[in-house]
Image (cartoon, rainbow, N blue to C red):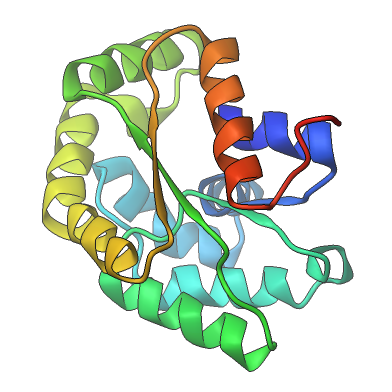
Length: 182
């Protein structure tokens, strides 16, 4: 999310954050919010059907026509396949998948700091442990799926935020997606 925000500000590419949208739905008390609150609080992944529905709706907005940065998706192979279909139906494709390579201990530390600042219920230790296990079981295989298609870009993501942002901009420039001179 942090790096997506930087790219959005620097290059004007809209960001689609499924986590932010789902949390907003929970806060607003919508039907969608009620459906996902328990799932999110437990640390489990929201269903592929719900995620793909949210993405479909966002892709159909005028702001998304020139391209978007997806933040928080895809997390399962069915989501990856669904995303590929959604984009193909619109005559579009995924240009690159950035994998932020961070050890578990660093992830846990970052989430603990965020919990102290934001107090998010989905950041409690049990939910974090569930999310890490869900990642290993469901999301890690997605890396190989994208790697086999030649779209996976690994970003070492430990260190100062600005250094990571520089790595992201360089990776996007190598993919021909941004101009470093901007």
